[in-house]
Image (cartoon, rainbow, N blue to C red; front, side, top):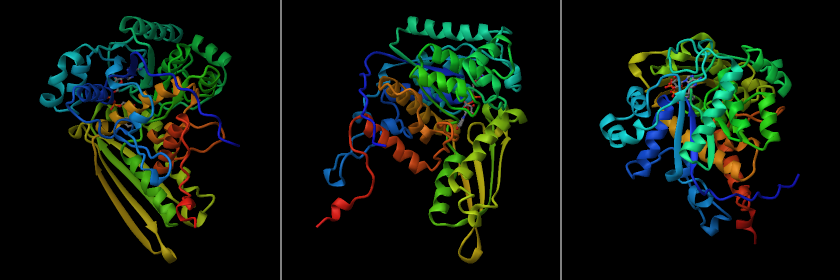
Length: 441
Ligand SMILES: NC(=O)c1ccc[n+]([C@@H]2O[C@H](COP(=O)([O-])OP(=O)(O)OC[C@H]3O[C@@H](n4cnc5c(N)ncnc54)[C@H](O)[C@@H]3O)[C@@H](O)[C@H]2O)c1
């Protein structure tokens, strides 16, 4: 099939409203970071949209503009924030409580702006995150009433902040594990399940549905289903609204999707991959509940199989023991430590080991991804690209793809896909890396 014609992109004029579901560590780090960058008080390190370049044309042309100069992205100055949370803390309190940023250097300097960002009450039910005890909720109301209340919040935000476009991003806690079932198959069943207050309809699905009903792109930074159900995928496609997910790819899985492709590229075998980590923030506390960890585990486990494709190479990858655990350990706060022990084998089956000890900062890694997702989702909307945005897989542990497709998990294939999509949107040639033209006589 030939490449479809490039779309026309509407300009990024006016204000972009960014609604974060959840105003915890990731969301407050995102907001504070952008506000600091706007004031020239920090660099958006880790953000491809802000710091990355993109090669255009042949290597001899030496054209490699910054991504943000190449595609018409919303300017950081045009972002207006809104949020929901189960706790009433404003962004100043949330950022201070999260303990990610240095208070003196990075919170006090923008204290007034952060204090002005107060969350709307959350559509929340304890059964979906039982370690979370906050009172700032819409109360014990029906799911239909929650849906309508979220829609009203979106419209009130749009009107009072006078924004021209809105994007919603899930930065809230990971909900309990729910598998797609009959309630999620089509609009009729979904609507019926909402009216019946069916447990299969989690709050994240109500936020996602409310966003789509209001024509708002939705990105999902956590592994819970939210927008990743047949009914909402179809709705987003039919109404041409960009969606993407799931689960920011920040620490251990980021490493995995770099190291596993290396093993496969070199045809080295894998016997086992043991990943464990300690984490002490509220995310870690929520994930300490087994039903919530199960959602995360599914998202983390899928990666290796997709990359290694054991059925195609059973001698190397047919018998891999893969284990992932997360341990809630309060003293570390947001500073996660992740250990990987990787048992590999080479020529004639001789065993070898790789050890990784990644002392990372969870939200410092996640905030730039959230920024890029917001800006690229808005770009997709203005380019008329609805439904699943597979080119944003780069940012996710468990990328949403069309039914029947396996997800591309290799970070560098994902990067190529993202950059080629940007080239295509802007009418530039795809880069195939064939490069015969440099050697033609
Ligand atoms: N930080 C990372 O590196 C990373 C990576 C991948 C995924 N994630 C996911 O991103 C999400 C946010 O992480 P975090 O570290 O900011 O967690 P956090 O616990 O600091 O913040 C989440 C916030 O969401 C709120 N919340 C929960 N349910 C809600 C609801 N129904 N409506 C509104 N607010 C709600 C909570 O009260 C909390 O303040 C988590 O699901 C986490 O698993 C984070």
